[in-house]
Image 1: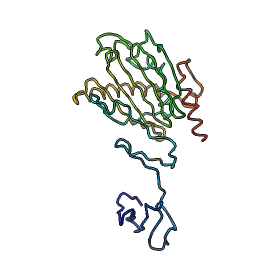
Image 2: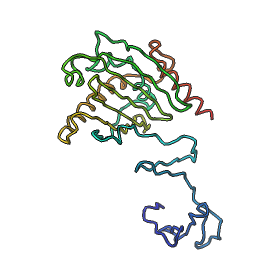
Image 3: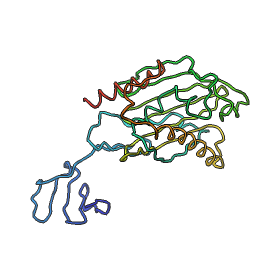
Image 4: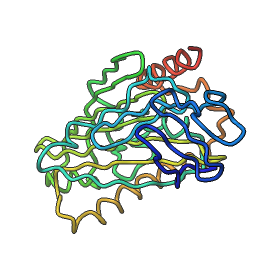
Length: 262
C-alpha cells in the first residue's frame, strides 16, 4: 500500500491507510501495533535521506558512502539564472555519460564545434577523488557558437568536464569576457532509453524572456548528441578510445568498476 496517504498518529508514528498498522519511525520503523501483529514483528525499510540546498537526496540501497552531488557555485551566485528540464534519449545511460565527458566529440557532432581547430588545447585530466574526475582544456569556438556571437569574434573558451559517480556529469564553459554556461546532468536508465535530468545555468541573457531561447539551443545540442547515440550499438563501445583526450573517460570507467566491485 502506498504511504502517500498515510497519517501521523503520534510523534514518530505513522499509520498505514490500508491495514491501520502503525510503525515507529523513532525505532527503526518497527511495527507498534496492528491487527494480527505483535510489537516488533515487522518493520519498514528505513532509507538514508538528506536535505541539501532544498533538494531531497535518498539512498535506495541504504549506502551513504556516496555523497549527494554538490551544486555548482554559480547556482548560488547573484547574476546567474538556472533553468531545468528532462529529456529522453534512446541509448544506454553509460553511452550518454561517456559522451558528455568525451572532449573530442565537440567538433565532430555539434554545429558550434570548430572543425578547423578540433583538438583541445592545454588538456589536463585528474582524478579528484575516488568518485570524481575533472578535465580542463581550452577550445577555440566556431563562428556559429553563441559565445562567439556574444564576444563578436572567434575566441578560446575555457572548458571544464567533470563526472561524479554513479551517474552525474557536468560541463562548464567560460568565455574570455566572463560569460559562463554550466550544464549539469543526471542520467537514469529506463528500459532501452536514458532519462536525462539537466540544469542549465548562465550569467548572460538572464532575463526570463530568454529562457525559451536558452532551452531551445540546449535541446538542439542534446538532439545532435542523440542522433549519434541512437546509432551506437552499446555492444561495440567498450575499449574504443580516440586518443589521449579520452583520459577522463578512462578514469571514469576504472572508478565505476571499482565502485561496482565494492
